[in-house]
Length: 126
Image 1 (cartoon, rainbow, N blue to C red):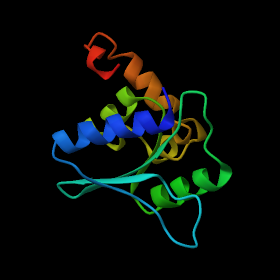
Image 2: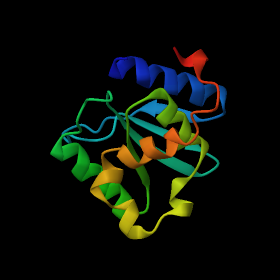
Image 3: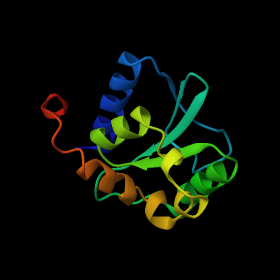
Image 4: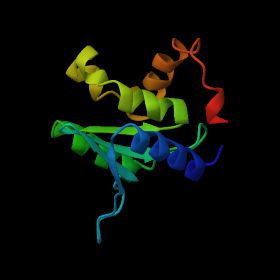
């Protein structure tokens, strides 16, 4: 699935589930995440990539900076991962060290968390 399609499907799900979301850009400042999602005071920045795609060092720097300021920011690689990110606040179960780890920044830890939920029905995403 393409990055654009992943982003579109996550945005559709978010809108249907009460999230305010917008494409995020910052003039004269590259590397910012693709989208910002807001619901009930929770703010989530998301950089969309394919499963094989890599976030650039500049994008990872921005995510680290956002996280250092206490804001949720993620690299999202699948529609399931995007839904998982928005459905749950993973920070509640993590230490600060885990939150700022390189594995978590690249989205691999979220993928592991999703693997445990594979029993749920995701056919509608295809």
